[in-house]
Image (tube, rainbow, N blue to C red; front, side, top):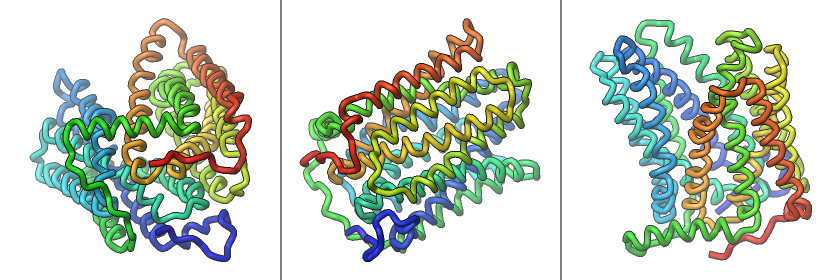
Length: 428
């Protein structure tokens, strides 16, 4: 049952933190995300130390991102179906146990100098598979513990905190790596962070509805996945906006993930620190944008705001491809981050609010899989184009393509008619 803040305005700034279950979950997950950020840097560094003298070093360094990414696309749809059949809080606890043990094993191997490339890749894959069940379970659990009116605030604060950890964790990990056994220390800290997350989940008191009990056969499995797709198709909001969000992600992912590493040194005459500053500006923009969004009124026309934020972020990206000053690039990325947290929080909050909880796990997992798949596709397409087209004009093109997609979404009749009133939800 959702806890609401009785006698207070539904969107009073940070009112959702008065919700005992949510505040406990929030603290545990911020701690865990900080550990995860350190784990990513430390694991890649450990792999580098193991393979840097090998002719296949580049291949091995690519194995970790692949092992982390593949489950998000391949395993996630199955995990979403299973999550809808399991109680969410125990699912989160056990997946954290699996991930915590896996990180602890990596830390032991690194500490005892027993690690091998295959062991690191396999354990990274195990962590990623467990994560595919944790994320949709968390989305459904938040739907149970937070009132509908406070979902936007809850997700905005989570997004803001996640962005803050993405800024802080690499800095902490980088400082630790300067010391002997620093990578092992970072990995142990991540294992401890999973322990904190597990303890926070054990302290929560949630009354969950009884999940499905019918046997899971291959026919039922694919039928449940089809039900998830049906839910996306039947809800006007997701049917209309999901293609725009997917196309938008495709247009912008390559810029943030790879093209910036070519553009900043060649055109801005910057270095690694310059890239770090620009990426940090993006994260800081997301932090501040999330805090602002957490305090806005519930009467805003959310779809209009979301598509307008997409358009502003797109134009910032297009402008970024035409400027040659690092400070200007940092400002543009800050504005882009400020806008994009509003896009992500608005889109996924509406899904949480409108999709029936008994279908939400599989829908969340399916959307996560589709959106995750745009990252390698975007890098493949625009990375190939970067061998024929100058990086600056290519970034401008990506930004303008995203702007066209954003404007088309803004002009769609569903968005133009939108108001603060929620749309009709899908009947289970």
